[in-house]
Amino acid sequence: MNRLIKVSPSPHEYSKGSTRKLMYGVVIALMPALLISTWFFGWAALMVTFISVASCVLFEYLIQKFLLKKESSINDGSAIVTGLLFAFCLPVNLPVGLIMLGALVSIGVAKMTFGGLGNNPFNPAIVGRVFLFLSFPVQMTTWPVPKGFSTSYADAITGSTIDLIACEGCGVCEIVCPVNAIQMVDRQSGNLFDSDTRVGRMAHAKLLPGEGNSGKLVTEVRKLASKIATDNGVSTVLIDGSPGIGCPVIATVTGIKLGIIVTEPTLSGIHDMERVNELLGKFKIKATVIINKFDLNMENTEAIEKYCEANDIEILGKIKFDHIMTDSMVAATTLPEFAPDHEISLLLRRMWTRVAEILAA
Image (tube, one colour):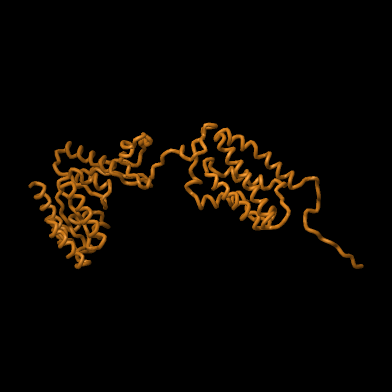
């Protein structure tokens, strides 16, 4: 017996529900969120929501009528839902043009490109938000302070923002700001230490993870070092400065009597030496030079020597490359302790004697 069985796709059970009823049910469910947004952000929240919904409905109508040449489906409420969800993803101070652009991407790219409601693989509102976030990250991450109905739709009320990367922590901006828009807030970025070592007292600091050096930090370390020297009757303080010529280096060299520039025979080493020498010159500080690993590039070493001669800079010494330096580091000792009779140890002593003579002059 042959019997033809017809199999059809779902749904197999029908009800009185419809897409229109479902979508407007979602709209009603979103109303509490809209009311809360309005409570916090005032008319600005309503303005963004209105522009988003109106743009989504308009773009869906225009695309279906003039591009797809098909009957409009804006009455099913799906464009309104997309507009509401998209608006809830946006800052209330976002420019109107960006809201409309995001709505166009949501409807035109994420929804209608795939055939409309039910065929789109991604949520249209999220696609619009991701597009704006990648294209306009500053505008999409700048939120105004929620002040209810006094919240301005303009983005200017977000206030000043400090560039944490460029900030040196010196506090000058707070002093010179003409409208007192900047306030320096104290927070712990590390710890200062007064340590006893086998060769004497040492003032130093340890930064917390992610914190950067600053001129203010160097100044605090110097204050501690000066106090230690005064309390113990020490006349000479050695300060280990950081590379470059920024605020930490300026704080390091301010008020010192002698600058010792340790350089290496590389192009970057020569460049940094010249910059530090210029900085010391501005503070009228005598500069001296030590050339480390001088034998690795004799041509650049000669260039350093010529520069020092031309600028009347004394070369305290030239240290050759030697694996014994690594051996002393592995042994956790200084080279003069590890190998007191080694030629580099003897050179270090001669250089320190010369430094003491310069300081005593």
